[in-house]
Length: 336
Image (tube, rainbow, N blue to C red; front, side, top):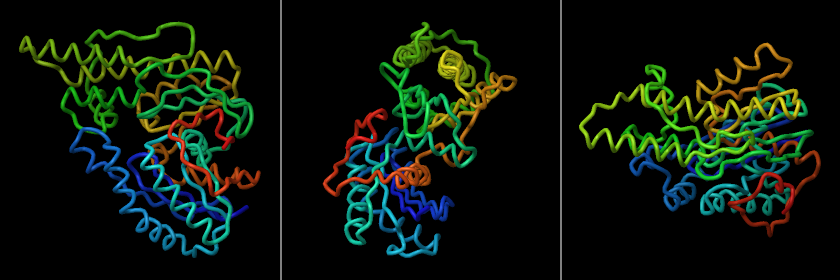
């Protein structure tokens, strides 16, 4: 085993974690949400600037919490992609500088693969497995037959599910991020509004653009006719369609691929309705469900460190000439 320092700066959290022999020693996260709420979403240029301002403070806090010195680190890991190019660049440059200064290996980590491996803070992964990766920028079904092997069998054709939640929240003036507030309000409502289910077919792909547009058009129509909008009922109607699309395709793929485990990953895996529906369906089956702890659903560096540990064991290191890749595909993450 080894001591890993991991850096995550893919979007709007500046995070650094340290693991020692597989044990999480520190996991410091500096969130930018309060600033981005002013604009109703993440502003990429501001995100990069805030990463640049905060990262050395986060680094110091992580080292202090772990009670360790930089020269004791065996390898430095960072999120190479996918993500915002300016934000990714900040984390990569810090990791490169540390690796060069202390003559230690540099480990690039795929952000979505790390979300999957965050589940190992709960239970070990068992293969073959199916992971539903759901977040603000991604909606994918990923099949794994062994460690570090990823095959995307379904993905969104347009908007990601988390992005759709944010846009619906924005049109309803609920604030940013949209996922938590919609989840909370939906618990008080009933699905009284009829909304379409896009891509209602037999494949594993997703589409959220039509659902988003249907909600936006409905809200505009109701406001133009001065009709009262029942917010809890509308959020419930929307969430049921959005989440049930994930649940139904996850169930279908799990059965088709005969998996041992179904795993949730990404920011939207914090959604209580999604966690409940997936758990309930597989409760009396021979398929085990692994749901990440809530702290691991949002972006953090602990998940980067968890995957980096496996890459360190296999000596999957990168040259210092490596660059960030905001569109890095999960199936190609071992290639750089």
